[in-house]
Length: 430
Image (cartoon, rainbow, N blue to C red):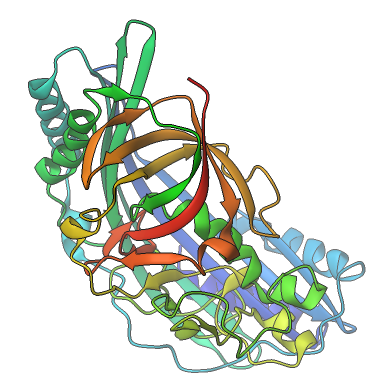
């Protein structure tokens, strides 16, 4: 299938029937491998084709998708039909040059299924070497794809992309206690060390060998790079231009105001080489770029897609549905291995259950610690169980005690250091 031919065939079919149209044709091939309960469970290769069409007809937006290149007439009919009931759209799809960003690594395309299986086995064996009683789950996945985007404004772009990810997690049952811990990495290159991934998982189990009690009360909490998701969920909602336009964001009307500690700076970027959240364009054909959201605690910008930006009288930032691309949190000045040094008592957060409970749009959260540790006199002394953490994201960001000096990539789209926050509510049920 020639992606360019398909895209331009669709544009020909809507020519003269709409004021603006954009077609995105993408295809990809993925090879996921999974091990479950110490054994190889599945390995397969799947191929996908998606043809998406957006039209603006009589001032309203219509959208549709199909997966069969033979269904182009149906695609056009569905898009035109949806435009009759779509939201008003006072814009045309743009034609701007793409940014420079690397998304494709030929070495990923060369990865054989055997290599993926070997990576899983290596991680599994390393965890088992630490403790054979741990039930291990491992995965590896490679993806190779290409996208062609064209619109009635003259945009004509073809891009290639790859991704590679591996991870391992385990379950350990002891006297009715179930401990789950794991780690994974993903990006667009073939260079991930299975031993490093397994080592991070083993370290979490090692720190959890002792179970300790933590008192209930307000105390400092260290959010590791992985644990920062507790705070970032509310920020994603608050920094969405769509929520600002609707008036539901608590950050509405606060541009230029201090909303966080001066040690907090946050940038959205779609142009980080080989990162999972990077791309040349968003779904509306707006080029990606970098948007400074919080500068030394001061709110500077929101994220906008083309539709929301037009309605708000703002410039689009290249963020599909006003959602983040990659988020980069600036490192601080405290070495990561010293950030707990002066802490007499506190909690370290790696993972939680119930994220999204409470009222995330307002910043309120209340979560159970799935994997957390107690700190005494600057040292991690063991894992805590049956413990809840509660607070308000926006208040927490104003009470930062320290920001680590070394950031790392988490989940493929977040680059962040650990952040120590004061005065959160810890509730122990044990």
